[in-house]
Amino acid sequence: MNSVKLIGHVGREINVKEFDGGKVATFSLATNESYINKNKEEVKNTAWHSIVAWGQLAQRCETLLEKGKMVSVEGKLSYRQYQNKDNQTVRVTEIVAFKVEEANKNQEVKA
Image 1 (cartoon, rainbow, N blue to C red):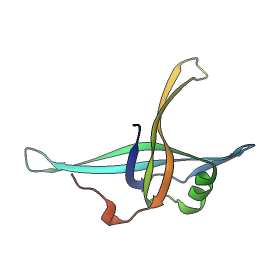
Image 2 (image 1 turned 180 degrees about the horizontal axis):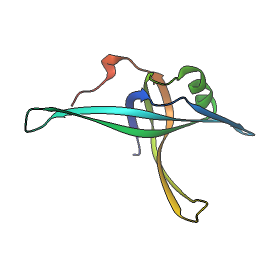
Image 3 (image 1 turned 90 degrees about the horizontal axis):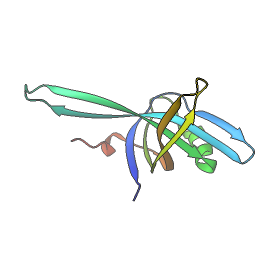
Image 4 (image 1 turned 90 degrees about the vertical axis):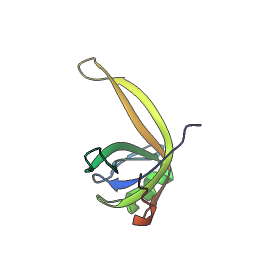
């Protein structure tokens, strides 16, 4: 089963494009984790994820999301590739969202 659930902060303003079949919204999501290393120091890591939402969900994201807002995203991992202008293969990993909701601090998971 290809399923992903992330809770994090929107990293930049949402980008929405319209086309004949509807809308597509893209945004970045920052997730944070921390741990204590062998020197008893807290180490914090931030991972950045590319999120894509289509149709009515894209429209909802357009009104719900803003930079810095904490959200919960459920979806699936998607891999694609394309040739850039220099004829090089570019590989892209993104999360195709099925559900995007406002989150609160209590939903953050600590490792």
